[in-house]
Length: 240
Image (tube, rainbow, N blue to C red; front, side, top):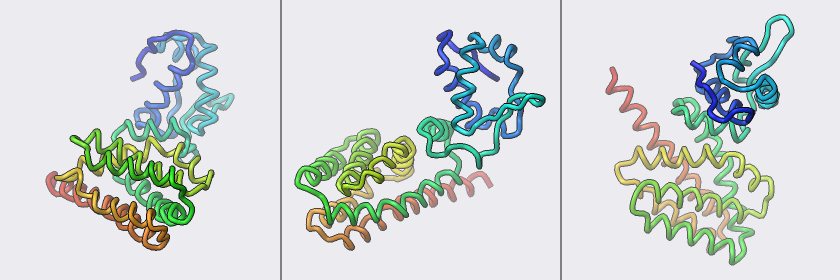
């Protein structure tokens, strides 16, 4: 189950390998990891590197070590869900419908408020960034180009809030949001289907209309969520 680490004596490689296995569900909550000497031998790393990796995984809330019972995976409620690595591992392991719903809920709480704040506080340079991201979305030739530009649009809106907490939050959830936007585009028959919604957000921010911007972003996020839900239902129906 555990693949050997290619680069020896590098605890970061061990962190990535074990983190992916834990978050991906291959090592389930409550399950014990192999003893230190066995795990180090199997992964072909030193015990020192393994111990360093265990400290990192413990700090992320994924594992806990006890003298008599050894090291076991903690329940997901204890995981640091906003840790950049944990988010990346969740997104890389084909996120569940439940996780996608939680991402959508997070967007509905944060992004409309961010759009309203951007409409109130944006400066000319920040508006230009939002406009450039929108232009890149309009010019996108495929889903990959669209997803990159879409993420840049939402990042530019958050930066225009002049709220360092919102900006910091974006840096934390960037991987998850990028995966969500890519999933939304992949599920749509026309990946540019949401371009008019983004145009309304842009126009409201340009005109300094906070409540219009809030409503436009709310519709943008809700439409993306509905698109993903619709295709999830079709997938379930196809399996029935």
